[in-house]
Length: 175
Length: 452
Image (cartoon, rainbow over all chains, first blue to last red; front, side, top):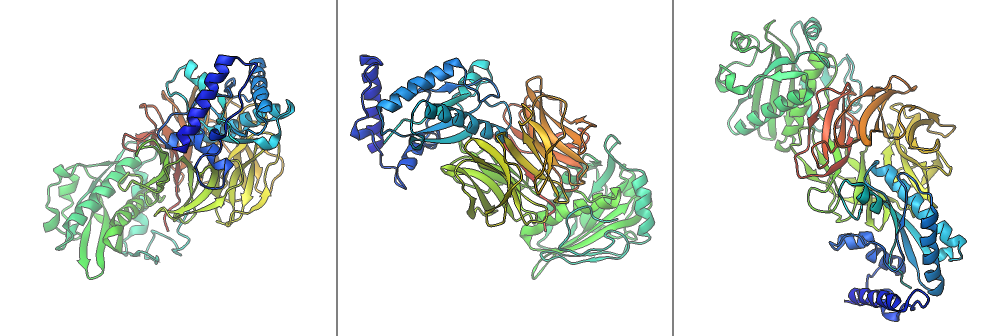
């Protein structure tokens, strides 16, 4: 129940941002804070609305969100120009919502082996986190996790699908 | 003839030659005195079998069964026959062609009419008896050379009903030992990750013939990269069940315990051959390095510590070295390093993406997956580098090779038929067979040593 309130709040906020434009970003309302995931608090609830939490509930992973996904070239964890732009926009949001925390998930496409892709996903998540920190976001607000090729957005063997899966995804931020 | 691996709990000497007694904890078995056997096996070996040779025709008769053991009698023969077929070295003559009635005929060299068997083309024959006594089953399985009309191997086993499969596999290994000089791999298990029960990746275990395929974990999360303890009684694996990708150890009944849960990856845990340390890839701050843990999960030391990706450790059989995958040279390649640390030595120089190394039990070669033309294929390379041999050339991806305990075979995952399945190949790349039934999306196979 509380979870759906939080999702609704995020959606309302997304709508609000869309309506008002990027210049005015709404703060997260209290309803969207830590929801009843139990356990030891913030990290548990972040996991819950992240890709694995959604997967356990029978949902596919989310694409983008309040904070947009970052994309990578094959077998790479380097940030190109457009990746840096997206991260910069995400950094702005995080600086405006200075209590928000998020988990940065690293993902890979299915080519490449399971273990190497988990390590590559970790590198991708770390690249993004490091750049956010250089842009002024406090490191303590950001955790990282890698899912390698385990939680793809799509499963078809096409270049377009592979490109979507080579991503860093931000778990919907919460306080 | 010595066993190449395993059997350390048994204390057999000169196994398979002359009169030898082997005592085991679970199963008692006594080798029958083989009449003139020391010469016979050498003669038979001359006519047999190696990769590329034609298959050796063998008949496997149901055992002569006492009351209450009829089903077990057929099951024993079925399992032995299937193992011999899977080995790729034998052609098992169809039971429908057998002339005699197993229940009414003799089981010793003196009482068998070998013409009944040579007529249908058999060169070797398995016969024997199975009885039920107060404590369980007693199996006497015998191997005969049809041409020489003599017994060349034999074992007696005492076991409970739930161990019948295992002793059938053990006898298949014995047949291979007698006829080829090297013990077969069938008394072992293969663990793998699979989503055959739904969307969650869980760890499964099976014998080579997939006869007792069952789930080991039921965590409803992502479980992957299983590997066996040296005694075949427990598995290491990595799971997201607690949120973080942590290293767990589990018995085959699913009773699991957290071993290493450092924040970040705790991935690809592998026991050293002596069972004293676990090599694992640990990630901290984005960099993944190979570390050694003690059996309680504490870090002993880091084998590598650098900015590169270092993953997928595999031990040399002497426990002195570790082979792993690293992108320190720009892209993923295979490296060997001393277990104490030091400067890794690169082993692969062909191809731009080489990963998932597995050190062969005989110590001489390393199997790995290499990306060629956008797909992954299995290769082996000499430990010193060079002498690269290609094992697969299929569509789809072939990944994560693991060696049989006898070093003759590899298992690996393959998507050549669509969804991932576990495949078997001999070390030369011939006789490739699918092992897991469909419906799987199976990956990351791990082959145990011989079961103790």
